[in-house]
Length: 374
Image 1 (cartoon, rainbow, N blue to C red):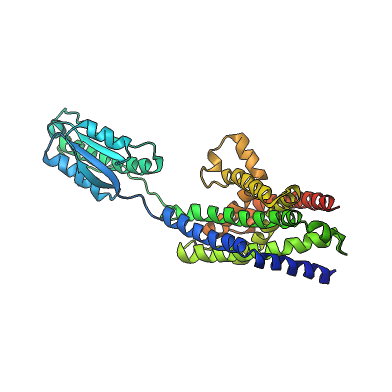
Image 2: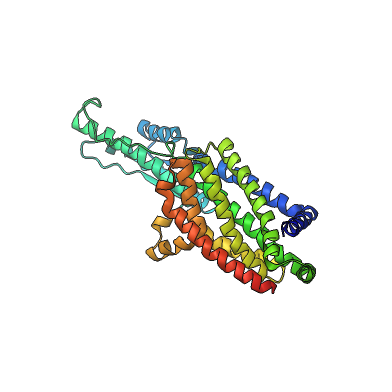
């Protein structure tokens, strides 16, 4: 039996050697996508184009602009003399923010009962940049508000102290978005790698007309399944090691927990996704159909990885549904081992859930595939 399985494994790698573009695309493409995602998310949002309409032309109006530029969130795009220019530039996407300082701003700021107004317009159609800009504006606003209060109460800045909570960030001290998005991207790329290679295994044979030849050979259905599955596991594990090395070296994603435990659970996760891929493969008549089914399933899974929206912020029904998504538990385990440094004593609910999903999906896929081959 081992000899027959080995022959099937060699046959699969011969197919992959002839269709070399597929493994090259999945391995190299996944690495490049991780690099791009990590590079884009590890950089703070800076140099947001800012247009200024200063109708006050005073020292404090120039100081406000200088403080905004010093946050590095904004970059002065141009000055203007009318609101229509701001509206036109905002509509055409030339700027993402505009600062409007009304006349008499300094007089109101220095008056004992004055109420100075400052208008900042943000381009909400680009919500990520707008959120970063809003935080910078609120910070500058608090600074000048405290300064105005100190001035009106005739206090010195040394004697006027406000409440300042002591905040400590655990596990991701710099609050780098890359430490959140890159592991999610790794999990998705690993899932797509397994699903695509597994989904194309039987659909390729059926499309080429060689599946019938394979079935009349002296191979049992179990041997065919194992012979098709092991190359997928080998390629997926190599891809996992490659991407894990990349995120550790390029983006300094720490591995604070047990690397051995992470590797073992990673292999288990590969087998879970393998079962889904084999079902897709047997169900598909062509490779194109298999590929489209992989994309459809992958798009559903991406919603529950926390990649775009945290699962905890979803409705309760969707949070419950996330528990049957293997990628959800895998990323909980991955982040727990790499970022938190925890082990089985903390992650056992997710490990148990992943194991149960593996038994259900694996058992169903073996029966479904064997029935499809009979």
